[in-house]
Length: 177
Image (tube, rainbow, N blue to C red; front, side):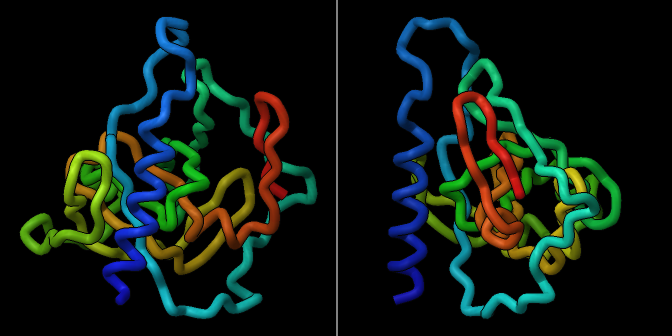
């Protein structure tokens, strides 16, 4: 049952990723071509103390890039910056193998298993827990994530986003409160 739920989540997210964000031929830059998504359904209830603790009360504003996507540099596990595609349709934070190695996240490619299905087929990776993820002072601890084989850009998904308060999109801006 859990695999079916995971499959449904991943397929829905993959559909959102393959739809063009720019009309054909508009030349506004190509979106990253990872073609798949990592998802992790968890049974862990959110503890109110786990919610983001903003360093300031001012909202974090993220500007849409030429390719139609939102990107942010986030501190992970105590200070290392990771360049993320903000993916509101992703269930979890997904790290590239390179980012995970640079961060010192414990994983082993020999232990990668199929953790979902995406537009390009099976998604292989390993589930991990990130001690801290912080975007412009909005820190969340014990964030569920995955290290994904073949991923070209790390994804900031709902295992972080759902715990920061609110996300608003207006025009070319995303605001985290």
